[in-house]
Picture 1: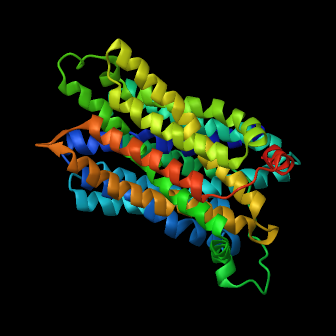
Picture 2 (picture 1 turned 45 degrees about the horizontal axis):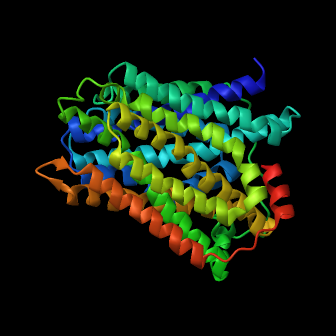
Length: 418
């Protein structure tokens, strides 16, 4: 089998693991284990905590002491054990600690999978810019297939989703042993621990424009966590209405939510055009407006014919909300920083989004869901409208505080490179 196909399998399994539980675990904890919103938010905050602490540390180990593919194998073995144990837990506190262990070993594998892919492509003499995106797309396909599998098998409210994720982790750990071995890098003798940890990128906070950008990266990271945590429980709650209990939305919510990931593929292709034509500020504002629509359409959507159209529209705009922020933000960071701290700056961007932002979003959204619940019944319309208002507020403040002049030539070159 060619190296590109072997890497596609790795990418597929990498995100199949995540798709098996990320969207549906909240529904399992709320409906089956009877956890409250705050407890669910705390469990989901593990992703944010791990993203702050672990990728840099594991990156140092992979760079300096152990081959990246071996670190990758060990991380997925630990994930398999943690997910297997999590399936037997019914207490919020213990679930937090076990899922924290899982997150601390899984989050670094996202970056490690990219490292392995880049190395293998370069070793094979293949251009990474043109060959890596088709490989990464198989990760999105894996995520979608996992969501469909869990939904069609009726496992959204079952601990079997965690057993399936555990099995996939074990399979990927074994499969990764067959991939080419990656040598440790030769680090510069004068490189400090501050530089190795990526902390030198914090100098960017001295620039007002970059400080504003990273602040909004964190705040939008919180928005992303809200929809990851409570999208599925919201759709499951339509079962409380006798009129909707046998609807497609209630029976297969993960299939409906998977349209969001399908939409991502389309909007990724649109990013170069929008960046070149309108610039990063407009693209980021479009993302914030899309987040508002995502939540607003959730507020008024339901399984009825008209309501289903609104839910479907919410899934479609998710692609714009996610990609126009995450990928465009990465392009902006690469354009703005000097080459000697480019990698560190990208790490800082991901830490703000998937680390600090995800943690804050998980905690606060859980408290908000509990605040707008009466006797365990959640007022989802109010909850989603509050989140939509939050997105609008972000857009307004961002418009007036983020100072940026569009330079089409510079952005065109950067977006083409990506």
